[in-house]
Image: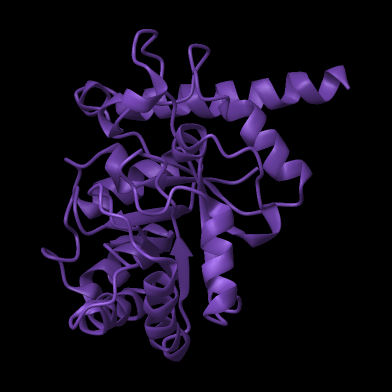
Length: 268
């Protein structure tokens, strides 16, 4: 399987250091961000592209256009700025997250927003990666609803799903959509006391033996369903960011996942 590294893993590392770490981990696919850290707001796309080429990495995505599902006067302008940056830095896609503030968004509004975004992405040769968020306050929790809106907006050629193992578990959505998935985000929750509805980004660490989200089962189901794309590590917890050697922890998690999938395969 193919692993990727999201910059949230080491937000304190400069781009060149982050890219170098990814390569040492055997990964040549990375994701950059516009929040933690804010690469877009601090670095020119030409500098990002040059650093990626020098390190031998490919930028899968910029994370994230937020909120993507609310039509507004500035939606197109925000999307064009991000899309122009993505094209200039060599990124393949934009991750798109829904409004996550406890306010419902009508399906018609999401369809209208997707219809606005589709030509912007098409014109620049980019993919829009729609990432449902499983939080109870999210305006788009389930992938099935995202697919329905994508179809209604006639956007199946340009929009794909992000299957996030954390958000999939929180949403309680049983069905997966390997054939509609363009990227998988993986993280684990090991806190034994937090209730599922109370899980937040601050609980997200790496996947290990204490994982409560069923990451190995989700990964296995996606692969058996035909998904052949990358699995990108996305831990948000401050406890992970404070580690003295996050690279070693990432290496251990990669080994744990590979071994777990291998044991399951051998038992078949």
